[in-house]
Length: 223
Image (tube, rainbow, N blue to C red; front, side):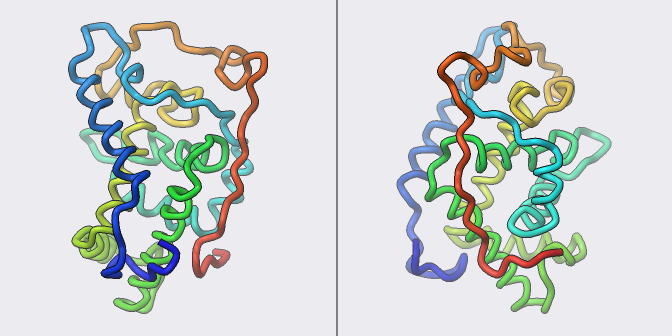
């Protein structure tokens, strides 16, 4: 994927990590739907283990790309409405930031997420002369629908949607779903004891939070 320059590059091929991960997601979702009454929905998701990033660290990161654009995309994919919480309400960006900086996530996946930010802004500038975050909602929708017609764009958006799904269902101690807002919306009651501070996976003896080197997205600029 090193030589891929845009979502519409004909040389792009769906990477193995994406195929494997989406197979796991499909299995997890089937398990979720088949889970017995009272069983926890999150039990069907892959196990996660990391230390949530400090709020100030995330606040500073949000001032620049790639996080500035990623936040705008997440909030567009799941806007707040009268029918349910939005990406901001479930802290989807907080969850994704933890995945990238704390969890031992595939480096190729992280690179793909960040390169997608550069590709999106390049496309936005070519179409409107503006960065994605500065566009009106209708123009953002138009651009995201356009990239979704490419294989790379569809894969990129699906990757972000999967993390929105995880943020909504994960226990709050992992960065998303504050106060169980996602569970409350889905009328879900966890069926097993949730970890408390001091008992989370990364706080157990012999476990450490994992920091991952972050590669800046193409064309990253300070807000």
